Length: 181
Image (cartoon, rainbow, N blue to C red; front, top):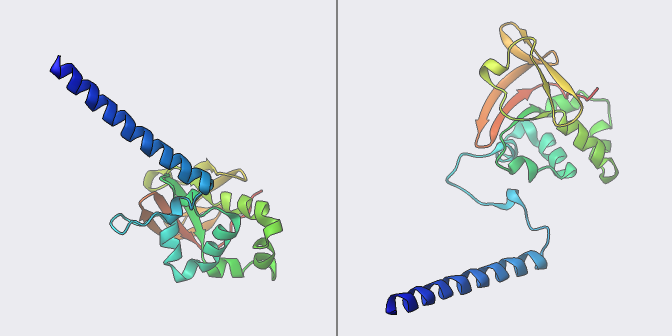
């Protein structure tokens, strides 16, 4: 009988503890329903994710500004895996004058999200998956075409300048902005 009472008390304590945690988590979510998101997680021990790599790259500051303006920082900070064809600042500079500034305006958030979605694939495209003739459906905007030039993979005819493996996927650096069709 003592064992049953002890077991009952233990179960009661555990359920009270869980209930208190549940209430405090609920209260925290009510106070700030959107919360800071995945990008606010501080982890100095793990390999950096796609957004962290981009933020640390002087050549991708325009891309980072675009991700922030489109509200996609948290999405690309999640577990993934993702493949991002990441245009350099020089790639954005090739667009007609005023294009980037216009896209970064709040009223163009949807259009910017569509363009960035055309640079993003859910899954990892690397190695054997980057063979000439392959096509992949992007998050938005349709398919990209993988090709080859001088023995290097291309996306929509643009050579991949570099590849960076991250904790949540892979970044392929490109020198052109891919526009949805």
